Length: 368
Image 1: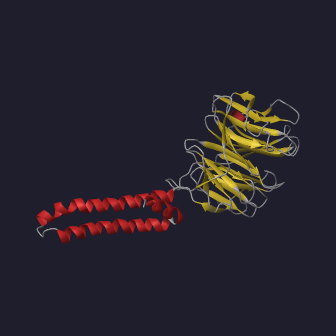
Image 2: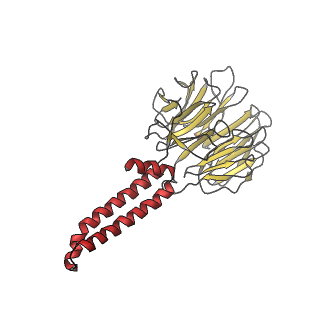
Image 3: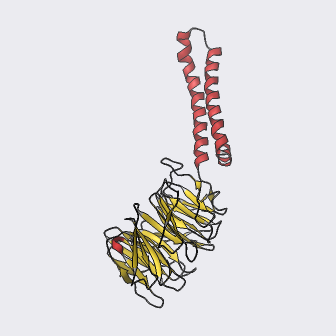
């Protein structure tokens, strides 16, 4: 019976919840009826004698209902290759992972107001070495086609590593808590901060000219969809720029603390929020449709931290409390990746073709 309940709940959770309620009512009424027809008509005797049988059937219906509800709310697991867990050289909280190809990648980490680290891997994430250490947490890392890699973090930290160099050089240090960045090339880019500041570099060399734009909400991530179009998200804000960050249009997408945004191609984009919402765009970020509603309570509430799609249909969601989901149909259906630890607080995910990397707090990194 339990196996049947779990199976049917996963197939049609709404129908099963209705049936469980019917079972609940049926068993309760049946208990009362049985007590009435088999017991004496003296009501002073009837009530106490009918209670045991009534309660047993009542509880049986309740258990069936709860089993159906629990099974219907579980995320079906799906295999995505075997993931291997790799520990960083020392304990720290990873914040962002990015790979230039299937072998060479970088990872930022640290603790706010304590220390920050930037690690690199040359073997697809099986081994990591410390590239540099700073005095505060680093939040994001990303490179461009020229081979230059950028990182940013708390206290306005902004670092750059040029091709063929082995050192990271600071190019900005101020008071901002930088959260995300995008540099299409070495002459222009955008960094967003928790204070709602957006710093645009270029069009001249980025160390010569900055443009600061202030918004009344914390900003958490930024990405590009084509050579001129950028997208930024934050606390109840979703924005789009068609001139590489000089001017921005706020879009009517609110109701969550949006933590991550990704465009696998110029037209298709995805973003996720810390309360469990997921939005999708099919017109280059001009309009967004909600494909998963978030909320204040489970099962809608899911603490998503990162979203990444390797193409228009294949994507990944990573979040706290063991949330690591996978889709192959553009977000219509999500499955939990099998074999991942339920106690992992995932913070970042990145993919190239079939290769996937996901990082979690306490120095944990996984790859397939």
